[in-house]
Image 1: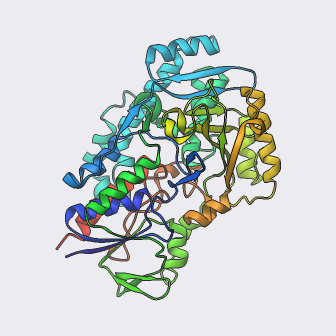
Image 2: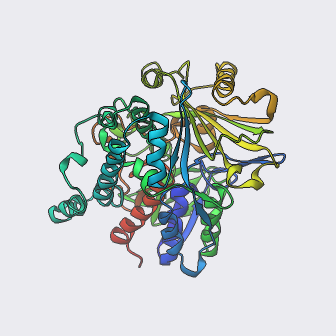
Length: 492
């Protein structure tokens, strides 16, 4: 029987463990923290429950596919589709609701911005065609296997839905591409999608224009029990399949002998034998710490990191009638915000503020008439708590200025995570949320491989490797990794 050791019980590690166990492998899942979930954990303060990590749920078919692989062992999971993706607020008083219904969206564009919605809707259609054309090639398979680049397969993927090569802007920047919408505030809205993998829209490739289709075309969703419900479903499914999940188990070394893995060594010296090892941990500490005696992929490990964030978790005794599940309060100068993040390695004086209120769709997460606010600003990887009090005050003032809600008056409790805290809690290098940034041509599609071609039996999953960060891509990484495992280390 094949024995698999999976390091890290985040979304990538859990999904890989489920697929391997469903195939009939003996799987041990090793998590250094006291609980599973990686970045997607939860916190309870009094009557408030907070999701600590990712707050956006899209492409639910990928989670369903993971659970389906477990057959009768799959845990139940329920979610609903939202009628809008986000509420947007600009400093000049402009408000915009991104409706899921195309007719309502068209009317909202006309009402909020006073422009013909045609170019915006055409832009979204282009996003859909680009997504459909490239997902099979760039997202749903490994990019580091020769079989992925067979001419017939490659042309077949690209030829599925592309009406013209203009939907695949391989040489342009995202900001330049988004000028086509014809309005600076809508351009800013579409630029934000670079932050979905922690990148700078003024340097990131225009190929990221496929991301808006996830929200505007496929829709946004809300798990019935909050985002942590995703972890609960994966965790229970893994247990149902017989996965041996060990928390508080830190892997010190991935053992390699004569070019093949043979197990892992835990802190304290315990050796766990395995003929396949999957690291769902961040790729940088995986190599620097667990594979320190092996050749290091320096180009990957020295790459510019993605952004991180400073997150305030506030229990707010306020109904917030103008806010929804997802809300954005824009910076006045968006380009300056990214210059601060990537050039000066600091948080902008006027940062964009994201507010997620999970209790808008999961009422049990807060008392009646109150909300569990997840308030985040982009921060450079490695940012510490110096200046935190000043940042909090700026965020409070911005919220009151743009929504009318006095945070200090209504806040009942607080918890804060900085990039350094995120690194300590999750092992993410410098607290970067998405591994390397995607600020160079095709960099979004050229992340670290899912299978090591030099060390037999060594695989990688999770947000710091291909295809990228965020719940959908981490689920895809688990599927890709398992497919490679079936091919190169088949069950005996």
